[in-house]
Length: 470
Image 1 (cartoon, one colour):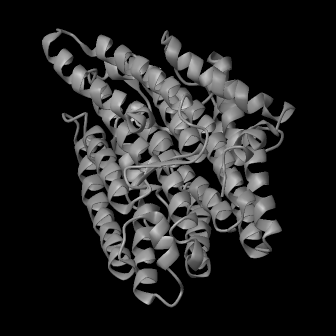
Image 2 (cartoon, rainbow, N blue to C red):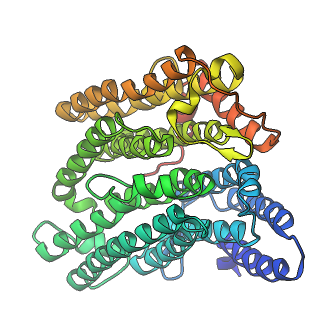
């Protein structure tokens, strides 16, 4: 009975998925009801997570952990999943993909992410990963009458299956050379002299880097972001990143903590490569979703820089960076959802030409979010990068910090280019006014949070310092 209390959020979500699958079949035009029930169940799951034990608790033979890190990341996952569903309601209806299966698949994917976040065993982690991935394959190709969406789903499926195979091979090597799948036992048996197990770590890092779209395993990201329905792209850009980065932290600092010198170089290389490619490759993009894909790759590079330090402050700065990145991206996709004219959604950056003349509030939101993504003070994005660079410099990794600063300057170019198009180019036909309150709340709330963050910049430090317990 005690064990059930600790897995109440997971049990509740599982039962909700099964109930909604059955209810959706028997109720005509059931999307609205199923979508509302999904949002309500995610909100209730947050309450269940908040009521979990504050101390470290391990269940199921130490293969599942409830600690502050897992509780915090589960809340983030569920919260941003709610915002994605709220902001994309209008988009789904106009594009005629408002099927009852959509929110259920999103819910099932979220359940997989929650299992990943609390996993303390290679097998449990892989079960959560596959539940998440299978749902994401379906979501990417959900607009099945459109070739781009089908192609995006197929590309993501093929490349993700390859990455999962490599990750599974790494897990089998770890198990073979340490004799266990439990994180703590692996940590005790793993040392630099165990060459086979260290080899396995490389394959696991490859699999995890694919999931967070870090270079050189980013190849799926621009095509899948562009081809998928925009509602799915916003989900891809936000929610799976939380689970994947949490697992990255968990793997590096629990089972692999004793071989830090062996994996640190790999993470530094991935971080530098992601920052450089994210900054340079986005310059020539005309599709805003492709640009957001390269932006996402670059931002994951900065997050990994904090992870590569091997310090507690590095992990904390990575988590703070992730939170601010999520808020910025939520606002950015809220603005993209507003690019609608005659029931058609536009994705080309040039369609924003002279937007400020007809849509001053939307233009201001774009301005705040893009300045923040570029890391310009005093917006939240500046503090996110500041915390990362401070922890990197404190660890004596000056080259990484310099490369990060240079790529920040380069990436500012393509963000400022969009602002120039919005404010200084000749206006085009105005977009339609959106009456979706969920979308407006998401966009305005994220813009306000980014804008006023400088008034109390230590708020996230206070929260995260009480969460991370390594």
